[in-house]
Length: 230
Image (cartoon, rainbow, N blue to C red; front, side, top):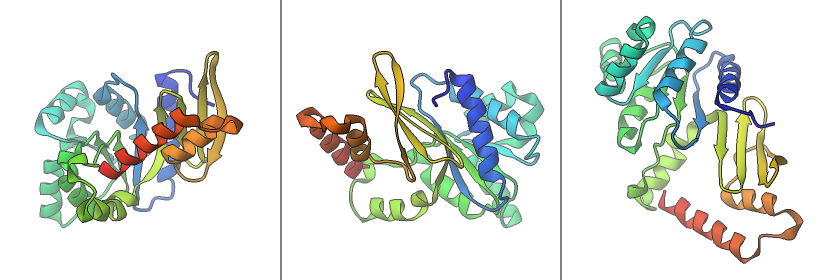
């Protein structure tokens, strides 16, 4: 079922990340809480504090120096384990790589190259919190396809809670993806998926026996075109 509030979602995310990391092997994991107006840095610091007892070497990485300084100011007890992507790259270049779990905070498409390099030289797991590494400006050519098939396709979802106009997607590792429909009196479970459902799969599941209709088909086509752009 869907969590009733943000703190409940955070608790689910922590449990899911712990489950994802329990294997101890190198892996690329995502955490997505896609709420409009969400303050990502306080959320990241709470996740770092909650995960650190089990992962004492966990480092939180911010996209730039300004965000890093702000995080260090707001979490002085963890300041020594908060750095920027460039800081981590310099550490890896000096040491030939890095260890310990990394928590990357909301990198943008502009940070793609740095994120890819950091992950390539890291020997343990990486958790990406509300990342957005796809770049619409890249277009639909060979570069975009290569990125999707390569680095970006290697990420697995540890936790996701993604609302939409018609419903919400939820995934908490190791459970499957869940789709909920937004009805006038609340959210109702619709279907399970082994893999993250694409917009067409979601639309078909939400429509049920009634079918998509013209409006639904137009939404699917819009989502398909947007996917090509990304």
